[in-house]
Image (cartoon, rainbow, N blue to C red):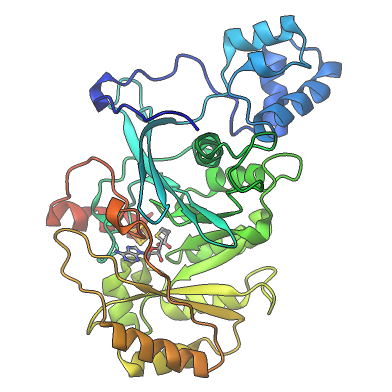
Length: 394
Ligand code: SAH
Ligand code: SF4
């Protein structure tokens, strides 16, 4: 385990001078090697070596790559790095949850640095890493803290896969290192951090293909879940091109209410969303879609809502995940009463659905769902409206 981290001010951030090889596909890696003069006949072997060092062993320097010739290492060193996003702060909750604040270069030259968060949640039978796909989010869901932040930019595939690598670094969780339990700590990945993953499709796909690669990080696709607020046209693509488990942020069973909670619903209403779920490539009783439902007091938590929810999911292999609302400063919502959550959950359970209520984790370090938000000012009501309009028209 590394020592405590010192947080330097954003302004003093110096972006890396050389590009990182993290996040490139094998063929992109081969092209990079070509650019620095590696002969075509050698590239495949070199790619294999690099892949192994980066994604199985977690090497942080070319110097560690002992079976790569010294000359080759020097050449790589001159042009590239294997750097992941810089970790600027680490918080550890009293329940073992860890949150890392990561610093990234601004999108354009000279632009201020950005920050995103990534959270590790240990449980008895698994360890789940909650990964971000964007800095902020354009979608302004009314109950989500991330939605109050300016969208700054999409993350690159290296910055997304790099979050998993950062977690393995900080937890000492690479294959040949000693973990406290003797087995891997990060076993599952959920794209439920900041941002809408299906609005950053290519980077998310490329990153998840790296994370699930058998000869690399090796987290099975069945242990990776992509959560979307309902970008319908990209749902089928996610099944075809990535093949991970799908979670839908449903949160309401009537369009009028969902329009308010998840404004993207105006563009892709519930009916279309459920159709996309019915047709999700690979969906089956053993690969169910998770429907997330945030419990908002007197907003979406009546027994009529529960009944309609069960009715509308009929025919879709589904799990329902009830999430107690996590309040944040300035929100107008409250979490449903515990009694009500239990009644709601019991109804769903009796209708044949497993309906775990997600236990909020890491509350003391603001690491729970929808609370992730980095150091940017709050949007004014007018800016929120403009952003919402932009997201609706693209
Ligand atoms: N943008 C994607 C993934 C990130 S959000 C999506 O919306 O699905 C991950 C989950 O946390 C979503 O289901 C989201 O609706 C939920 N969420 C957001 N804010 C929350 C809050 N304050 N309390 C509880 N859940 C929240
Ligand atoms: Fe974006 Fe998801 Fe938050 Fe909605 S719930 S604002 S889509 S991160």
